[in-house]
Image (cartoon, rainbow, N blue to C red; front, side, top):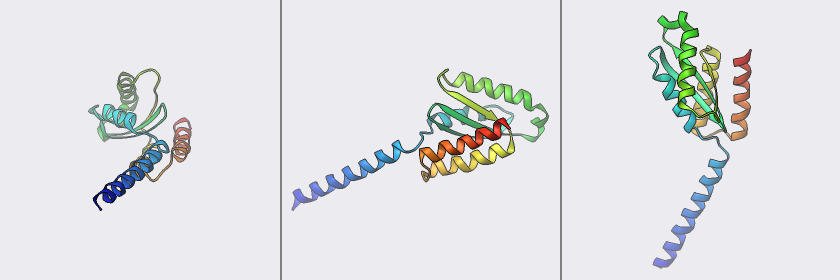
Length: 135
């Protein structure tokens, strides 16, 4: 009877491990996003940062304190320098202080962190974010 329990436990563990492995491959890892958000939030002008990464691209948006809103070009320059210091040349990052981009990345970041979005959907959403950054 004890052997059956051990075999059953091993089978359940194997199935659980296989399922999580498949889910991990179907989603974008957020290690670069967390690193980018921390680098930008270290700036004293920034109150909060949102970031989502997929493959070798990181999209970052920051909420700037009201008293620094007139200095946005300098804030953008500082944030870009902080991000370029934090990442290698093989990682491309996109930074914005635009409110619409902030809202899009906030929603996308929440969905990614909950795990209810696939890699393909994440890429599609990041393409829409990129269009807002360009436009």
